[in-house]
Image (tube, rainbow, N blue to C red; front, side, top):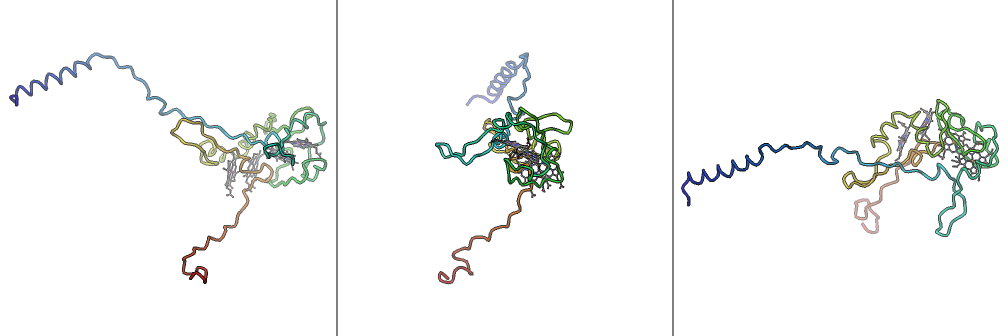
Length: 201
Ligand code: HEC
Ligand code: HEC
Ligand code: HEC
Ligand code: HEC
């Protein structure tokens, strides 16, 4: 056992050498890596915005789709319909229940272009950018959607992978956007509950 004062001196020597090491070493400040970087988020791009489904199936059994522009780039302009009943040549049977909006509140019919949408200021949008149209009239829901509180987010916040969220029209039909009311199903009957099936008592 060394004498206590010797030991104290030894400790002091070690401690002062540590302090000395840190002296006069300029430390560059850097923000912690990536901690406050928002992770990338992608909005799903539903196929129905740019193509329609046919009854044909491909070799993998998936429905064959036709792009809107396939027909609309060839179509001559017809007057904009005012109700679904005006569509008698194609797209018959459309259901429309979206406030008191007119078809022309969202659509423009222009020759030799794809089917176009328009914002309130007249700016034309391809249907692939429909989200901007929804956002224009539904500000509070769009704000919540941007923050992940409406429409939800899929994926993990900590694995660095791209997270995805659904597009408005994945959940809401553009023409009848109310989410249908559902009747809750009766709960399953427990096999061993008191009011269970009589033959199994
Ligand atoms: C197979 C051809 C075809 C495809 C594909 C198609 N349309 Fe059409 N569309 C038509 C025809 C034909 C009419 C006219 C129907 C009528 O007046 O009865 C029409 C009418 C419309 C109208 C009414 C205004 C107008 O221009 O006459 C809109 C809006 C429209 N289509 C949007 C779309 C969108 C959006 C898509 C893709 C998601 C699409 N269409 C895909 C053939 C097509
Ligand atoms: C709130 C905006 C909005 C209004 C109002 C609206 N549409 Fe659309 N419509 C869309 C969007 C967005 C699409 C792109 C495809 C989708 O979401 O289904 C579309 C697609 C279509 C299509 C392509 C095929 C299909 O069934 O999706 C047709 C046809 C069409 N609209 C006709 C009409 C007619 C007719 C009216 C009026 C009765 C109307 N739309 C009113 C936004 C609107
Ligand atoms: C031009 C303005 C306008 C645009 C563009 C628009 N909406 Fe609407 N939306 C309305 C109005 C008006 C109502 C009816 C509000 C009411 O009845 O209280 C409504 C109602 C709704 C509702 C509630 C339906 C219900 O009955 O509960 C949903 C959901 C909705 N819109 C989704 C959408 C989506 C998705 C889009 C984009 C494809 C869109 N809206 C584009 C004006 C718009
Ligand atoms: C994951 C599905 C989902 C997505 C994505 C989604 N919504 Fe909704 N939305 C809902 C549900 C569920 C409700 C509640 C319906 C109810 O109460 O009947 C709703 C309600 C609404 C309402 C009616 C609000 C009210 O208080 O009655 C509007 C308007 C609306 N959504 C617009 C949008 C818009 C705009 C987008 C895209 C920016 C969007 N939603 C994306 C599922 C979704």
